[in-house]
Each structure stands twice: as C-alpha cells, then as structure tokens.
Image (tube, rainbow, N blue to C red; front, side, top):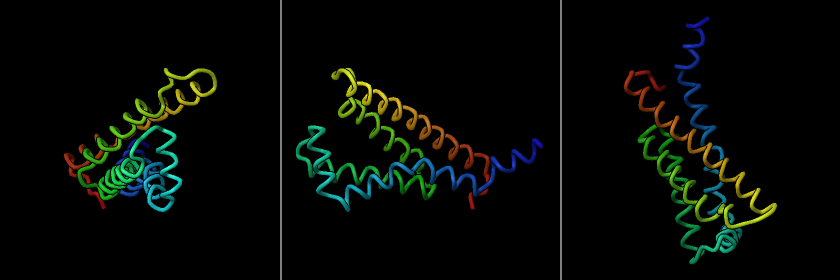
Length: 140
C-alpha cells in the first residue's frame, strides 16, 4: 500500500494536475484583465489604483508570467514568488480589513486569509518542483 501511495505522489500526472490546480485562480484573472479590459479598469479604480490602465496591464503580466513559469515547470520558484508577492501586495493594498468595519471588514479579512493560504500552496509548489528536480524524478 505504501508503494502504491508513493507511486501516485511521485507521478507526472499528479504533478501536472497540482500545477494546474494552483493556477486555477491566476490564469482566468490574468486573461480577464486582457479580455475584459474596461471591467478590469473599473476594479483598479475601486481599489484606488491610479493610473488604472498601468495597474491593470501590470497585474495581467504578473499573473500570466508567473502562471506560465509554473505551468511549464521552469523556474517554478520565480513564478511562485511572483504570484505570492502579488497576493501579499493585494492584501496590503486592496483587502485592508483593518481599515474597514462591519461586513466589508469581514469580507476583506476572508480574502486576506484566502490569499495567505494560496501563498502557502505556491511555496509548497516551489518546494515540490525543487525536490523533484533534485531527486531526478521524471517530469513527463
């Protein structure tokens, strides 16, 4: 039974699925910033980010660049770090629960918790990529 579990955990297909799952929130968000440009500009304005076009384009680049690195399993540490810093910045710029009260504070706190959890997943992804390469586990 132990070897069966080890085979699954070391499998290429599970590694691909893992990378796809961690990117499930980043790729659609990055694409939405391109294909729904006006809607994304409105989001930037609501967040108080000016010039809105700059922050929208920068966000799209960061989200898609980090995602591509992770998806291709190349420089996963850089992709994960890029996306983690993006999430951390959104907590301190957009989801400032300490500045709000009531329901708005609660929702912002939940977003901050969610972002923190995803940062942990990104760190685990970077560590896994490093260890797979170090142990020379076949990637495909």
